[in-house]
Length: 334
Image 1: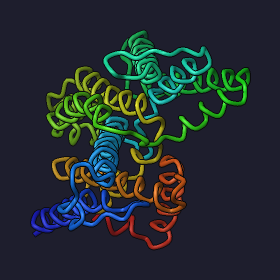
Image 2: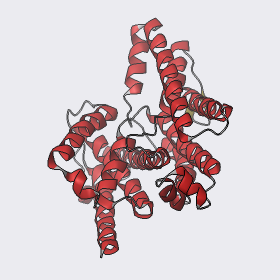
Image 3: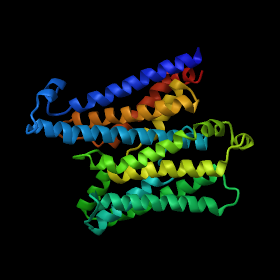
């Protein structure tokens, strides 16, 4: 009976996610309906708006949200902490430092159609991953706590460097850094989607292949090791897979917080702790959540936009308070 209810809930959440993905492109300053799309000629400006701006933007938001949420779920299982986020290990601050440094130095280049700012941010993100993993390996018999502490230390270090760059920057550069830190999907065309898709696909597959190990590690590292889980290999795979996904997303779209912490937590309350069900629900719910947030960001004060990172933060805090007041968290665990 419980398994049947979980499958039913899974189907409902997947349906809602698909509905959000299909409906989002029709919302915006320019009114476009399904009938309009069918009737539009290729030279119609609305066709460019729909196919070259809205569709790529919705796909990018869905992919980013899905990857952020799935990475958050994996880290929460790995650290056995529901407050762990994809940004806990310093990937976001490392990537942000690379982008801020690029802006401050006044560089201007592109590689294979990818902006120099994104390239710089991704390289810096990979550097932060290497530092965290290197610090973890320095201590023999290191645990997830060691990795967590290393990540927090690296996160604060890069955050401090960003503050230094902002302090010595002029007004224009400082504003560009701040705006980039708020995140956003102001893209045209599909190049950004094509850039992040390989990282998200590979990272998601790696995490999905280790669902049983994530279930076991939630019971404790000693018990998981006793049942044959290679903890070092699992930590390395999850760490690299999630960090590559987050690094690619942050390098292109900036820092979008709260998704990786809130969505897995809410999905866990709804569907339970079994990652066999939790992983696909988190993946699609994260994508749908960020698509909805992005739709709100470009419609609430249209024609201006609110950075999507601001929207996710504004929605995240009150939602947790609502769950606390209504006692939903207690229901979700049974």
